[in-house]
Length: 215
Image 1 (spheres, one colour):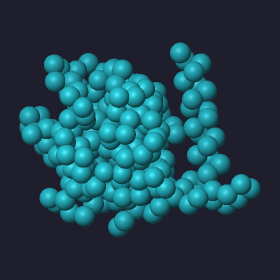
Image 2: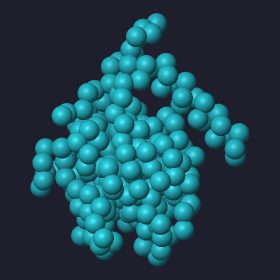
Image 3: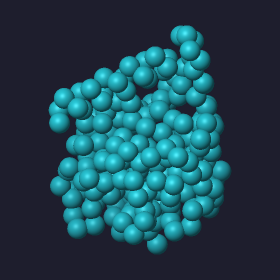
């Protein structure tokens, strides 16, 4: 069955390199950034390996091996989130979307929860699962707006540092009664790169400044 977040939704049926820890004044520090090149534009994501190392490794590994390329955001709910990462969404059967996926350890495997204190705010990257807390596979979601009722119930493992306007475009696309976009919102390509920490922080600050100005 499809995996749900609360009663609303968030279900899911080479290894990644952990980001380096930046020290004050360490201009050479870098961290891993994954860029999702989607139908609507690019979304750049940074990660929290200190709080959820296995979920970070899982996402980065799937990104490197190509599992996410060609998948789509199969469920989008304005005011809530966009959900993707299901390899089932690559086929022509929309009825199995939300039911697939597995961890970086291989088909039939899942991740143990790594719940933490990071709140589910706009731009947060978190992991989809079924009612079993230890059932995360490959499906993930990005928050469109703050949703505190998810806090401590789903594993937060990253955040958007560029492209929050792309999240807005995806979530506001016309959709059917199952919240599936009428036009597929694809992840066409993924880049896994090391960015200087200063670039990550600058990109994040600029993104939120533009977001505030636009609202």
